[in-house]
Structures are given as structure tokens and as C-alpha cells.
Image 1: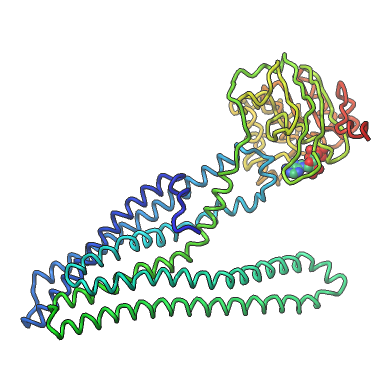
Image 2 (image 1 turned 60 degrees about the horizontal axis):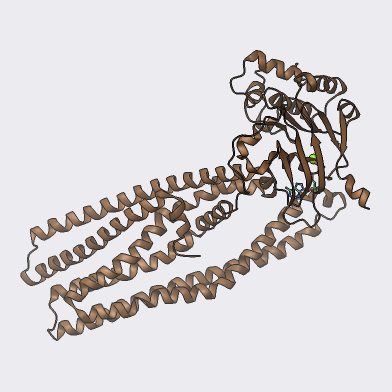
Length: 541
Ligand code: ADP
Ligand code: MG
């Protein structure tokens, strides 16, 4: 983990602005700390030597304190603003990037993990901006300023601080190395425990059924015990290490104090200078110690931002920028020798697939589950890049075209309908936002869902509708577009015979080209021809 991730500064302008503001505030704070020490020393020396307080010094001291409070307030305000702005920038960038990466990439990601990352995960950046970064800036500015000012009054004390100061980061690193193995062991125990718990809870009905639930108690107790002792030992380490750092800083200050005291007694140092040095010395060590503390507090946020950068650095599939996509109403579409291999798979999902789609044709893709039918549709939509072979339209390869313009030629009904919160009509209008109520109703009838009211709410992910209803709403959403090619992934799964007949009738109504993944005989019978996916393997075998 680096002290400051340059990617954060590169990706988010707010982070750069914040860092600049923090430097200004940090320098200001450093100057005020010095002024405060100087004024305090002068005031105390005045009382001791002349026996009465100096009014102007008291006023100046008050002003310095107020100014420090104002700077702290300003720091807090900029930090909260910066954190909010950076989080929203990163969220937007990840959303945009995952949209470009497409649904196939998303299905390879654990989408729940991505959701947590984008919501709560990034919130962990708050302490990073509000505590850690300002402290890092202070650690870089204050000690240097303090030592420089001390040197004007007492070179020896300044030298002592300059020599002992680096010991703190050195010890921090040493302690960090020593505790790394420990915290790794603790994290492992925790993840074992989490898995075990999840396993036991998920399997509880089965365990109960076979009378084995009690036996799990001992196992859980053993894992918990291990976790407890690991936690205790890392707590011990944490206390010990902060004790060591505290001790180091105290001894260093004591060294300075002893030297100053001796020189004061010998008369080689004035009282005011000696006081100034003594007040300033602890201030030099403080920011360094605190930066270590906040470093750990913001570790979660840094881990979240690293996860964000992993997503953002996933390369986008290569794509062209031509916008003159041929109209597939009149142009044939061909797939030549298309072979797709998903990352992490040895077997190709689709092997040397050929297909010739003439305008207006209704083609049924058939074949057993897992043979690559959905993959054919994903290739056409440009969601997956074939490792070999091409999609050709009007003499040009599909990947020469700008993806969003290319996709306008297609209306897609995926295997999982993917409805949004809102009404049935809202979801159908995703296909054509300016569609009139009549057009929406017509599309619903064409999809065999004429019985659904336009204002019926669909719930989260369509949960208020049955599976078959969701599918038909998704189909209506595709039918209402004016895309020349319909790509349907098992459009009649979960539909009764009547609804299926309505869908079959609706398919041909627009005279569009239809490429559909079909299992059911009625749907297959409605097609002009049937293409068996994955047959080449059988021929080769
Ligand atoms: P079908 O639609 O014919 O049932 P698919 O095209 O969905 O088959 O999948 C073909 C093969 O590719 C299957 O073995 C499936 O497990 C695999 N597959 C599909 N999508 C992915 C993915 N995103 N990542 C890895 N493997 C995948
Ligand atoms: Mg499929």
C-alpha cells in the first residue's frame, strides 16, 4: 500500500484540488503552530521575568488560536466535499466503464460484490480524505518547518530533533513488517470462520434432517476460539507498537529538554528561546505519529479504491468508430467460423460456427443447453469478442463499427428479462421512449401480453410479475423498437400454449428478421428454418 495512490489523483480532479488545498492549509497550520509556540514562550517569559502579563501577546495568542480553529474547520469542509466529489466521480466512471464492458463481463464479476463496492465500499474513502491525507500533508510540512524555526534559536536542539525524528517512521515500518504476518493470519481465520458459518447456516435444514446439527457446535467453537486468540494477539501487538512509538517520541523530547535545560543553567540560552524550543519539540513528532494511526483507519477505503481501479483498468474490447452501419432490413448478416472462448475456460463456448441470415428470415437456433446459443446472440451484439472468425454485414466486419450504432440494428430479449422498477408501460417504453399508449398496448398484444395493464407496477427486477409475464413485457420492449433484427433468447419459456401462440403470431407481424433461441416445438415450427448450434463438433467426432 502506497502512502498516496497516484491513480486517485489522476482519475479524480477533486482529489488534486483537495491535495493542493490541503498543502496550503498544512503550511498555514505549520506557521500558526510556530507562532503559537513563539507567543507562548514570550508570554511565559514575560510573566516570569517582569512579573506581569503582556497584553498584546495575549491578544495575538488568542488570534492564533482562533485562526487555527478556522483552518481546522476549513480542512474539514474541503475534506468532506472532496470525499463526496471523488466518490461520485469514481462511481460514475465505474458505471460507465462497466456499461461499455457489457453484460457478459458483468456476469463474470460477482455483481453483488460490485454493488457493495460502489455503495458502501467507497464510503470507506471518507476517513482517507478527512483524516489520513491532511495528516500526511501535515507530516510532510510541519516537522520541517518546526525544525527550521528551532534552528534559528537553538541549533543543538534542532539537530537533536532532526536526528531522532526519522526514527519514528523507521520504527513504524519495522513494526508494520512484524505485524503483517500476524494480521494476515487473523484475516485468514476470519474468512475461514465466515465461510464456515455461512456453510453451517445454509446447510442447517439438511444437518437437522440427519440429526447432525449439534455436531457442528464443536467445529464452530474451535474456529471461533482460533479467531479470538488471533484477535487478542494482534490487539496486544497494536498496543505494544503504539506504546513503543509513544515511548520513542517521549524519549526524544526528553533528550531535547535535557540539553535545553543544561544550556539554560549554563546561561548559553535565554529563557524565552528555551521555552519556545520546548513547546515546539513535541509538535514535530505529533503529525508523524498520527499519520501512522490514520493510515490503518483508512486502509479499507484504499482497498475499495484499488478494487475500483481494477475495474477501471479492465481493457475495453477493441471497437471501430464507423457509423455507416448497413441497414440490416436489406443487407444479409453472416457469421464465419466464429469461435468464442470465455476467460478461464479451456473449452470454447462456440466452435467454428457459421450462419447466414437473410433479411426477413425467421431462424430458430436449437441445441442442448450450454452449447452456445446465447453466445451466438452475444457475439452479434458485440458483447463478446470471438477469438476466431468474423461477423460480416454488407462486406464489412462488424467490429469496424461503433458499438452503440451497431447495436441499434438489434432488439434483444435476453434470457433473463431484466425489468426495471416502474410500470409495465415504463419498461416497454425503454424500447422507444416517445411511444404513445396505443403503441405500447399494440406491442404488448404482439407479445401475447394484452391482458397486462399499462400502469401495472412490475416491482424490483419485475418481481411483481410472473416469469412468463416478465418475458412477454421484455418481448414487447423489443417489438416496439424499429430495429430490423430481433434477437430472442427463449422468448416463450414459461408461457402457456395460448400466450405462446400469440407470440408466434406476433413475431412475423413486422416482417423483421428474427433470430431466436428456441426449445419448444411451436416456436420451432414457426421458423423458416432451424439451425442446430454445435453440430460441427458432432460431425468431427
Ligand atoms: P446456451 O445458451 O446454449 O445454453 P451459452 O451460450 O449460455 O449456452 O453458454 C455456452 C457455454 O459457455 C456454457 O458452457 C457456459 O457455461 C459458458 N459460458 C456462458 N457465459 C459465460 C461467461 N460469462 N463466462 C464463462 N463461461 C460462460
Ligand atoms: Mg442460453
